[in-house]
Image (cartoon, rainbow, N blue to C red; front, side):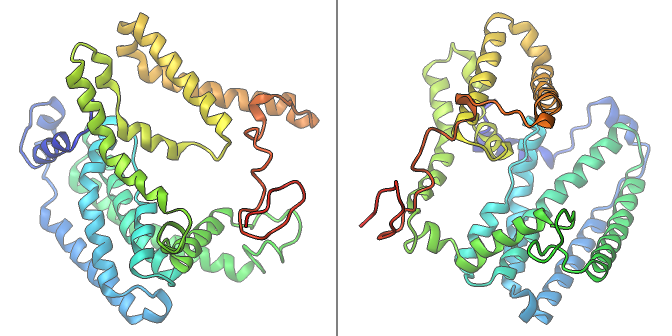
Length: 357
């Protein structure tokens, strides 16, 4: 299925139409539905509180009122199309990079504002989809919608206070928490996830994308990938029109292919090529020669590959890792690029590396 703009538009319109044909929906008619004004009231109250907090604590949060409204607009705009992609492909593209990119350009030099903008623009969309997934589960389990709604609202309020209280307790009770230079050796309180969040705020908020990907940076050519991502689904559509008899072309889903790279762990190019080769070859062979099996068990094959990878990782660790035994072969070579660690700035001399002038 090729997710083009026209298809997303058709699915978006159908989301607002009353089509109650399945048995689950017929059974759920017995329960009272959640009124829309409940959602609207929560939305208005939350936006108003967020704007007030950002304006009242403007020196700490750095995010002005227009930044909150822009973040909410981004979340509103992307929730439905990304929800359609999630429901169709089980892949959820994230807005974390694009929100950091936008705010870094509009409001450079303010890392905290960049973090807040990402939270309101990206996490809001992500939590909305999680909310819908819970409602979908409750729909199939025949749980009354109002009961589901109250459980989610109450659970959210409890979680907010628990998270905040836990954070305060940890910061007060553990000296030098998250400071890897002052913590004792072997301390578990290194906060790797928080360091990633902090590093992102510095890169996108303090330094700003303009100094990296703009006219003041050296990686401006990366911006062409935005255009490539926009026209990639069109290429699949044109290929299908040119070769209508090749049904396998319809199975190419560019949002999944492009978005799935975000699910890959940090690794070298060799690992990526191996992953693509095994996944594509196994999928093509099964589809080519056992299409009937593929149509019924393609998700089973995907789960088997994931489970096999996890099993082999544990097996290799138990058999080799515990004995400090490593295997040196082309699969774990560092891309075969001996100059990858060389500096690229002008005038810096490092033995064995070229000097740029």
